[in-house]
Length: 485
Image (cartoon, helix red, strand yellow):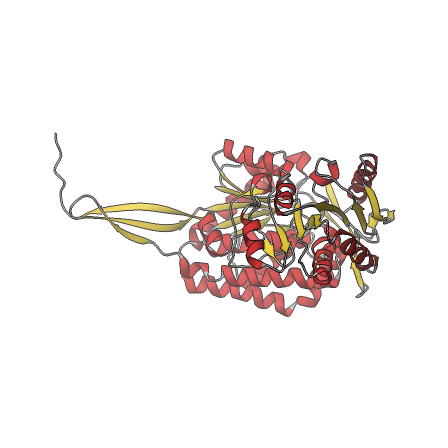
């Protein structure tokens, strides 16, 4: 049986073990404060052992028949399907997530593994002509070697697997460091899944660490060639700089400040529903969540009134309750920071459309109106059930407001004229944007990534295959060249 307690170990070289640190991580249920488990943390020596194990195992994994690799990844999906209810319980307990969110995340995980299972059969190369006679140029797609993955707390199961599964499918070894708030869902559960699927020992390692003890050792270690990080822009900037300094490729999926635009000809009732889902799913703790709702002045009053009614109906509380939509945010610090942002917005001239109470890390939804682009709350990523509503006069002003941010991840435009929406979308500096839909999208074969301070690189489908492999040029001469000396 899968339990948080049974998964509260390091997984290094195929062995479940305690970390060598004297420090212990206490894993706490964010809703009720229950202590779920304690984990002896990993040290820099543990990290070194993990990377060394992955390095050695990858040499053999690269030789494994492509169809056998595919079969192992497919078995991982089967294992998840056979333990879906247990995994759902783990998500609810460790993340304070609702059952709806758990189902959503598990579905994403299964899809990305299924896509990654095709990678071993897609490691094709090319033979290209040469400017020289009797010569050919061969391009081989090969694994990079070992990939270091650092994952966040909000969708840890999926956002870990989003790098882990494609990296393994492309023939690499992986060392995974989950966020300290979600060591099981972001780390050790994934190790268990692949262990049961038959992945060779040592290929995938999971280290649960204290960043204050290890510093940048996970990034600076000489073995990994790629560091894939999902998390905040501030931390991502540091990781990217350290990786580049050590000549490693960073893949960075960072924060967002998505704009949800409602044009004057939009279906208002549908826009209200999609705006609600775009903001308050998993208590607003999604990088693609709609932080800013931009509404044309002609429909501003109608939209805000209906939006307030819809959001007011969302049940807040125990994530185990099937009717609960909004559970806790990750911790009291996050709730407190959001409370301060709300207070600051009021001093800057915003008004409260819907005021939500804050108790510990449980926050009722808050809607803030009369927000202008220069306000702090309009510029920061709001990782919680708080949203800004802003008015605009015309298409160009909506585009300008949407672009008035250092982020560029996702967005949405609602309009009766699809082509108008597409033309607007082309002018908004984001990696992704959706017409007449929600801001929260991730599909296994479509390029995912951001612009600006929302990240570097693209994942999913062919883009993940490209990110986690490299092209090697081998030329072959069948004759003898003539030289000038």
